[in-house]
Structures are given as structure tokens and as C-alpha cells.
Length: 246
Image (cartoon, rainbow, N blue to C red; front, side, top):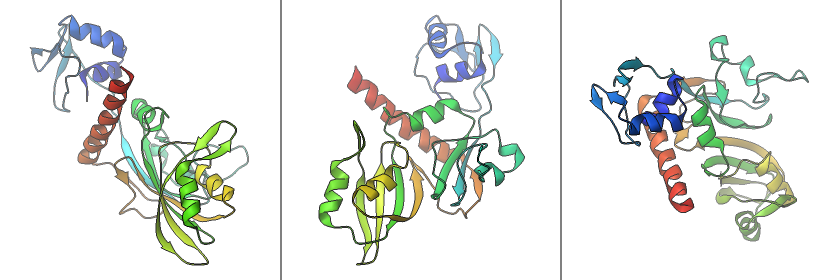
């Protein structure tokens, strides 16, 4: 984790103020003064500011296989079942990273790390999400080109998807669709625009995290290696965006 983020998570300063503390030589890692803003620290490192030891917030990260029939929220005024009806009480402080609609299933990342949620969901960062989609009829090559070229599902809002056909017959088509946007019911609306219907929709991957090895309704904490790979992936995207914007 970058040191300015760690300091900000401790609650003693904002990230901008943390950068100032670092530049002023007031931050030490394991007794050595650090002045490089992008300095990366490890879990076992001891960070001090003006000689006082600080501790970052204890974040948790999980992957969860949402079954169809549940909505991705903590409560519902209509009385519908939510994912928190499945999750144990001690998991109710975890927030979902993005949403899956009631009829969809698959991977949801759960965490109490607000910065990670921001980076995984903000539209300017363009994180990939991969879905397996079964459609009730045959999808033509021309329709595949339409999906890739973009469909205006709302006035002024164009939805795009990278699409590959995994299986196809006259009665159904199995697609793998990759999105870099987060519009409401985006895949279903794109398929409906073509005159077809989605039979089933399952998210299999979000960034570097996948649903493999999970049963419906099951959750598991992310392993340290998975968290490192996810942060590396996000850092590359964010750094690339900052270089383009500079």
C-alpha cells in the first residue's frame, strides 16, 4: 500500500496532508525517514509520524457468489430478499463493490475499504467485469458487431461490450461479455435492444478476482496474493489514466 494512503486510513490526515508530511521529512518507516510520495509499505512495516506510531484501518476483503433471487443491498422497502439474508451478521458491515440485479448471479467483491470500492467502480477508471450470458435465440455476426460498436440504451448514453460466442444454436447462444462501464441492467438492455432476451446472466470475474471455487451463496476471504494482484492491476490502470490526463 502507498504510504500516503496508509497515513490517511489511520485518520490523522487526508492524503494531500499526508503527502505534505512526507515531503517535510516527518514520516519514518522502520526508523528511516521516507520522502518519496509513492513509497510502498508492507503489512509488517512500522510507520511513525513525528515519532508517533500510527496504525492503518483493518480492512477486510471477500469474494461472494450471489445466487439469483437476491438483491444487492442491505435492506429493501418492498421486502425482497437481499444478500445480507445469506451473509452472517459479522459480514453486514461489508459493502458490495458494484451490484448485480435480482435475476443475475455470480461474483460480488465485499469489503470495508472505501478507496478500493471507488477505484473498482468509478466510471473513469474502466475496470473490466466479465459475464457469461445465455440468450434465448441465435445471435448473428451483425448483432455481435452492433454490441461491440455501441448501443444507445439511454438518451446520450452509449453502452459497449467486448463479446465472444462460446456456444451457439438456433435456440440459444452462450456469450462471454466484458464490460468497462456500470450502467443499470446494461447487458439485459443491450440484448433486448437486439430483440432477444437473457435467459441467465452470471458475473464470473471482476478485475483480477473470479468466482471459481465458490458455490452459490458461499463467500471466502481474499488471500494476500489475490489482494496484491488486484492492487497491482488497479495501480496500472490508475497510473495509465493519470499519464494520459497529464
